[in-house]
Every structure is written in C-alpha cells, then in structure tokens.
Image (cartoon, rainbow, N blue to C red; front, top):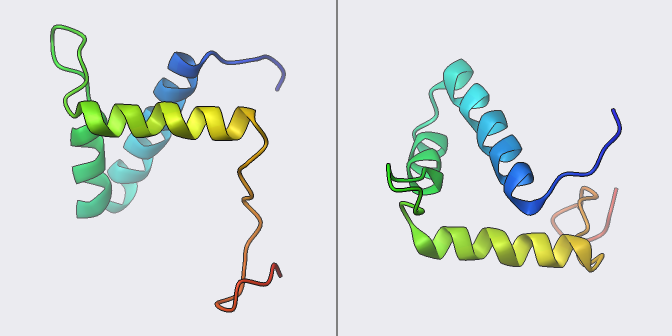
Length: 78
C-alpha cells in the first residue's frame, strides 16, 4: 500500500476504521467517539473541539512526535 493521505483523507480513514470496529463490537465508547467525529449535514464538525484535537494529532505525527510503541505500566517500551 503506497500513497500519501491529506489530513482530511486520514481523518476519513480513521473514521472508517473506527466505524468498522464499532460494527463488530458495538462498544459504547467507540460509538460516542464516532458521534463526536461525525460531520453535520452542512459539513461542519459535530464537535469542533475534537476536530481541533485531530488537527493537533496530525501536526504531532508530521513532526515525528508520536511514539506508538507499546509500553509497560512503568513507561518502558516492550
């Protein structure tokens, strides 16, 4: 899989992934998150604060500030 996603495309990819996970497990937490991540019919974010957090997350990832390695409870990667 090659290619580069825009921030908006990555947002939609994340939404699709979470939506698929919700269909499988029906997690209330994921359902609530999907509601906050949804866009209103006028294409505005349902929850502007969480959309801003997404933009901050994209900026952190682009700046190399995201570490997704698993860590033990004491903070050491394993």
